[in-house]
Image 1 (cartoon, rainbow, N blue to C red):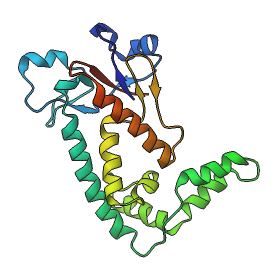
Image 2 (tube, helix red, strand yellow; image 1 turned 45 degrees about the vertical axis):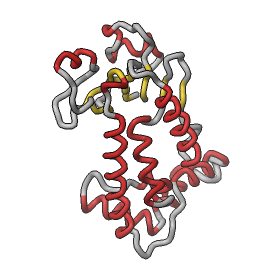
Image 3 (cartoon, rainbow, N blue to C red; image 1 turned 90 degrees about the horizontal axis):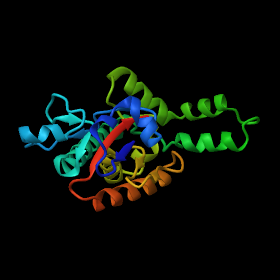
Length: 215
């Protein structure tokens, strides 16, 4: 979750054990963001959870000191590479139904269509087999079956999805206390969330502080 911090919030409240009391968020700070590439030494104290690395990861800071554009570009490039790998891996298989389709059927009639049956039907699809076998033999960082609906939308759509998700994460808490989040895991609902979150980020002033939390 991305938290838009209220103006004037003391830094001593930005710790994992105090997030719940102040924001109603139970979680820990996470290094989602990148600090600006030319961060000055005197600007480092304005950052939250700054870590070593290049790009420099951090849990947050003022918008003007975060490299949101760089994050989106890198995510889009990585998604393009993963899509090309995925396209070769699933070549010859039919499009597969994504997991939310099976989950929705289960939730509509959980006694007749159990969660175990839904999981079995989803994983029985040849395209899902191909993706899981590739991930098992290649290692982490491969196209995930959890993103099946997104990646089947096409390369450009998948790149846009990953670029937007890089800065908007899975949910957002605005400075005035509004919670933005997808209504469900289906792609249409995720796109609606990303549209709202990106519009909100675009409207923020340069001194607005953002904080990333794993809940």
